[in-house]
Every structure is written in C-alpha cells, then in structure tokens.
Length: 503
Image 1: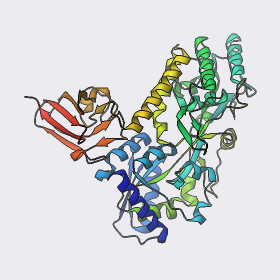
Image 2 (image 1 turned 135 degrees about the horizontal axis):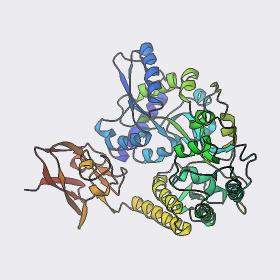
Image 3 (image 1 turned 60 degrees about the vertical axis):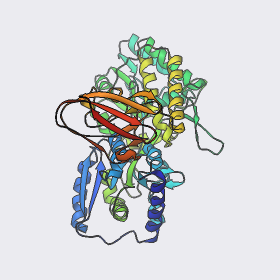
Image 4 (image 1 turned 180 degrees about the vertical axis):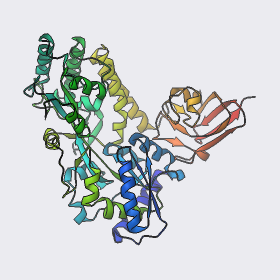
C-alpha cells in the first residue's frame, strides 16, 4: 500500500469512526494483536484476559522493544505481519504518519476532556490526534542532599561543586551524565541556549535550522569538554554506573526520569529531585524534553473499529489507566498516584520542551549521540558538533530529495554476513555497491537455509522495497539448498532486487 492509498484509507476510516457508535458489536472469535514493550506487555496480557471474559474478543500480546516495534510495523505491516494496536513513544508519530502506517484517532469530545491537554498535544501531528496516551515523562536533577544541599544555579556552579567535592574527599564526582545520550544531555544544551530545531514564522519546526552548533549549543559543548578534560566527568557512563556511584555516596548529582523513581528510593540516599541549573549568559533553568507513550492503531489492521472500541471503552478507564501509567506520569482524569517523586518530576518539567515529532527528528539521534561520545573521549567539542550538524543536514536533505546514498539488503541472513543482528537496514556489511546507471550489487556468502529480506534505501526503513519492487511490500524469500555465494542486484528504475547463485 503506497502512502497516498494509506492516507485515503485513513480518511475513510476516520469518517466511519466518527459516524458510528464507539461500541460496535463484538463478535465471538475476533482477535486483537497488541505489540507492547517488556514493561507493559505482562500487564496488558492480564488485562486482556479480563477483556476477553467480558467481550469474547481474544487479546494477543507480543512483547517487543519500542524501537523495534516501529521499524517492524514499517517493514512488515502491509504484508499482514503487523499488530492491530501498538504502544509507541510520541516522537515516532511523524515517521509513522508520513509512511502511512497508523490511523488517526477520532476521540469523542467527552472522552477527550478526561485527558490532560499536554498529553494530547504530544500525539497531535498535522492537526490530527494519532494515539491514545497513557503516560508522559520528563527527566529531572537528582541530588544527594548531604553532598549538594542546594540546587546549583548554573552549570558553571556544577563545575565548582564537582571540584570541591573531589578536593575535600567527599565524593569522586559532583555530576555525571549518560554518555552519548542526546536526550539526557538536552537540559545542558538548552540551558546554554542551544536547541534541536528552530521554528518557522508559523510556529512549526524548521528542520533546516539545527541548533546543536548554534552559539548556545557550542557553549554547552565547551562546558562538557572542559568537564571531561578536567576529569570531573568520565566516558562510558550508563544508568547502572550512575546508580552504583550514587548509592555508594560517590556521586552528588545525575539525571533520570520517573521510570527510575523506585530505583532512586532504593538507593537509601537522602535525595531531592529538582529542576535543572541554568547557565551564565544563558537560560535561568535548563529545559528537559517532555515525552509520552500511547496506543496507535495500525493502518494495516483488519479491525479498525474493534481496535478503537478497545481503546475507548476498555483502555480509557480509571482502573486500566491506573494500572498502565506506572513509571510515567498519569494523564487521565481520576487516576491517583502515590509515588512520592512524581510531584517533583512534574515541577521539574514545568518548562519542558515537547520532543519534536517531525520525521526529521529521526536524523538527529545517532549523529548527536556520536558527537557527545567523541567529546567524552577528549574530542574537540566545536568540531564534533559541527560534524554532527553537517551529518544531520545531509541526512535530512537526502531523505527529502529521494537521492540514494546507500542500498542494503536487511534480512534474516544479516548476522551470517557480519552484521550484529538480523534486519538492520544500516548495517554496512549488507550494503550493495553502486555500479552506476541506478544498478547496485554485491555478493555475500550465505549458509544453506530459507531466508526473508528486503531492500532498504539510505540505511533506514523509511524507504524500503519488497516483492516486485513494491514500497513497504511483502518480504522477499531466498531459499538455499546449500551454502552459496549469492549476488544481489538492485535496479533503481524498478526498485526490484534479483538474486543469483554464483557457480
């Protein structure tokens, strides 16, 4: 199904949904398949059994990482291998919409009033709601109050505190941040005046204006570079490293979100959760990203009305929403929470910036993360951030132009030819070589077996081709009776890939 057909189908479904009751008749034997992350899947399995008892509709749950779910829906959805419903972070919405992979949500006004406005805004794209939210989130600063009694006013003050704690032998580190993580580093970037995307006159994001190497972005990079150069921060820092040091009293401050609330409590440290420092000649306080998670309806479902009924009449209820929000801030009126840290996280997110949902955001994470990792390893921050922005700009331009920089054959044999995993569109070991005139080819040694694969353009699933060169088409089957060298040839004119066993 191409994008135009999907969007027309979406409009038709939207009109149908608006025209019928939100409680269509339920047929015994109907089944809904839901893809959910490991945190939510067991709970949905239990809740699904209750729904089945009430309605006779079977609920099947597939546990799958959120990023994998997005890519698999884009890759396999049209071939009939996708879900009816799927949990996804809000920043995936733009890419899913642009690829015609999800349907709009036509929520009745009386139901819409029960959701927080901020949560609905997160999942609104092109003036249309695309998901039913169940939780929102933002990170905050966590402090050991014995080591850091007061919230630092600026990141420059964080440097001073870090030096004092080390010189006095009170703690090894005053502050650490997750290495190569643009999401957790953003409150530093924003405090100095940096940003991800600028804005157009109408208030929409301008993907041609990437602000990681703006004056503020470079100032944030310079601060990070100095912290690493002085040994006040170190590379290879993960959540586990942060919590171990914090528990041991060797770390004064770090960043995390409500999903780690219980873990913070379990450290046994006398802590406080607060807003972020600002920066001299920058902002008064650093702003974190705000984000959320919600349920989307696949554009490829055969049961759109049933899927929406499940969301409106079962998921969007006090009891179910109270079960689902755990680890996120609840968004549904009437849901009460007893987590002692949530109010502090909410206060810390008062100035949060919604993470952009435009598809171009997917071009940011890898390049920005690589730059931050390089800075942590002693690289020059200005050079690293300039390179990151150049990579982001080139990636966005490439996607918009339709030009081909790379062609790969992601599939079930990828781990056999040097990729870390199967089905990785960006794995260079599965790249074809440009022969000119739109022809790309390469030969791989593949063990005997039956495999499925597709063609991916420019290292991601945004543009992919299956059987007969169809965009988002069915997987191509490769059957090898014995180990063989197989030549793959892709023709840009037809988007068809052929295979030939080398004798």
